[in-house]
Length: 339
Image (cartoon, rainbow, N blue to C red):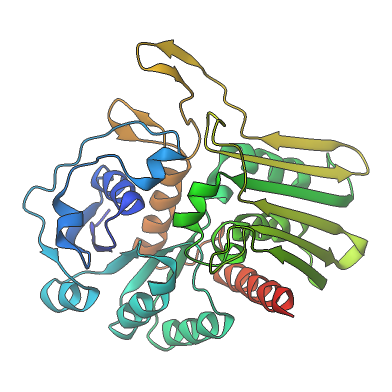
């Protein structure tokens, strides 16, 4: 298999995780890294705002002689890359992705794809014009717990879906980071995506409610109701007032009520470690560090996207049209809540 030359744009908390995964994929060459703050690239993995509300395992990064740049423009002008991995703040997804697509680079971009529906449509048109691929990191579609539930649905074991509920709730301090974008896009987008994936139906009606109890730019209490074809209702809750004593940073639960079965999945820790560092609850599904390497859903996701680029095919796990539909719904919910 040929190697893919990729550039990473954005090297904060999650960009470093992407780097660690890509560095250990044998058919990938990291040709350059760009971040508006060069010091952000060269500093080691240290305590970050995210580490206060995410269970973290340390890992080491060795940049070697990989070239470092201040912008996507500089990286693309100096390096012959095939693809760009976009891991910048949500509001900058559009600019970085558009620039790379206009220079005929395939794209891997973290969720949310963008924060405006019109931008999603525009970027798809540019990609089609320049024969480029766009892959969006909806990581939960690679979580083996979620994949198992999807398989149950496909096999008919849940029966006819009648109601789905989601809750994804965080500590207030997490809002300072993830609340930088409207949570309809930053947090709730995960569950909008899963609702579409699980039902396979179109949304016919939407309702949204928000509160601004933290007095910040974006809401901190959000509730959405989606009505799908076949009379399926879905309730999505996103609250940023979880107690700071929560030992694993956030709570998530999904419930699917079907004609044959009810399925419940939550993020309750599976392993507890009682030791000199206190009580720890290692994260085992999204990006666990095992023998110094990042495994789990993030690795599965990036490996899948890289193979799709090398084989010049679209993703059958995260189709772009479904991604754009999540943006349409998030955009609509945001506008409804403003009324």
